[in-house]
Image 1: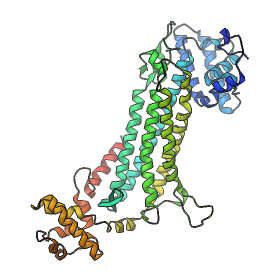
Image 2: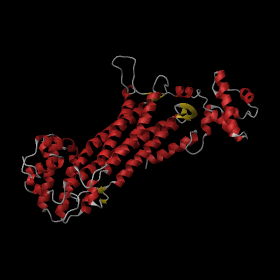
Image 3: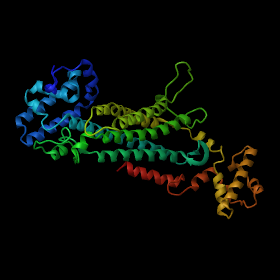
Image 4: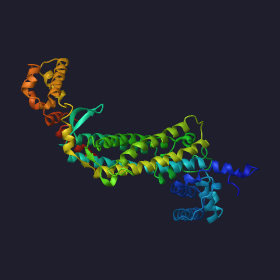
Length: 458
């Protein structure tokens, strides 16, 4: 079978080249975008007098039949067709005849694939963005129920200060809100139509790129055709946004893995989101969280892969750019199922309040309160820090938490300690003392919940 581009060639393609060169078995995922773009392109050609109304109607009807064949599984994907564009055009021509051969007027596969792939990236960016919003909603709901649940706040994975479980969940809500905004930003930045740029220099045909842009849902056409067919920033933006979201999901997953262990017991992941061992009947493994943590490396690799493909390409289109899609398809699929299952798992998770609050009595979490009290009462902070360290040592010797020392214990360390400090060392009082905007006090957390509630209902 002759290739559509084979006019200047004297020899048939090597069978090995056909297999090596073809992208049809993965870019067929773009069939909806390809058919949508072709229908709008045909309408523009008709509006401009390049196609007759009958030719446009035949093309649109034929493309509808092609779509049906693809979706009902009767369409034949052949390696010799090379890619989704040539395959659909060939079948269209078989269905409607010579009118199908006119569809490619004033366009190239260069701007056609840029259109299809951009439409795919934008549509899936919107889907992932909305899934992230649902994730923020679940985290906010958990926070609403656990404003009073104390948790050891940590630095260096060591007990530091008492916070609430709500406060901790809202930290992740803040991360995923930024991820949502990252997807919104990339959608706005890349919402420009490539079609009509042809191979690299535009076309001599009297086309209307603003018509196609508007009818395909873009803000407007791209400004420079050479840049347009060379550009995969929209795919890199999507891969980057997915990678950052996965970094955040991986950090949360790591904490859930730790928290669900016997050593911590802060949370219990439901049976529906856990797996067992093939040999140890007692095991209940947090595989969802572990898989998300593992898949982070995979999506980060897809980003690095495309960055590496693009790093030294001369303008305009180069065949290297055929390597742009599989990583994006993989990252998009991985992101959608990972965000969905993380959201579902969090909604079903049990919060073990008693274990969390018991853990707050380890590590002397109110030590900073003692140092701050002394400093506020005229003791130089470095001295206050030293005195507090001695108080911690006394508590260690007694086998109690700093918050459980008596006033007499504290007074024996330094006579500048007054009785007013005792209630300040209470762990719940310590948590609620941090009322500053963005802090962990119940009233500060309530403001944060109200903030997210307002954002979620926009």
